[in-house]
Image (cartoon, rainbow, N blue to C red; front, side, top):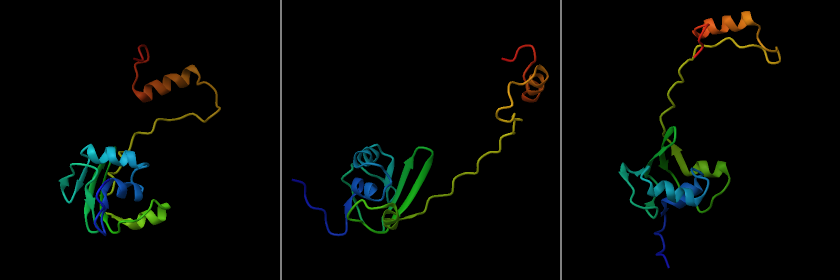
Length: 133
């Protein structure tokens, strides 16, 4: 049988699940052992790592970086508003999206473009009219 956790602490995989950072405890465990989580700037060795209030978690997830300050431990996986009280999100804002040149679009249901319109589209997009590829 596993040793009981000290009062005011919880395993990191449980906390990630309680705080709704991951969808399941199994995914939380995989994230913890994959090396994508730092606890107070140090990589954690296993999912059994203990978390307490005041700890800072840096979680590298696909397409984003989460920096969370643990405010409370939690006792269950409750609704989302309850889960958001367990941490303070200190993540940097996402980088601004690059503006992409807008290609003229036809209205939906307008049918196929005419030959003249296809040539104009090719010219705008910079395709060679003879060899489009």
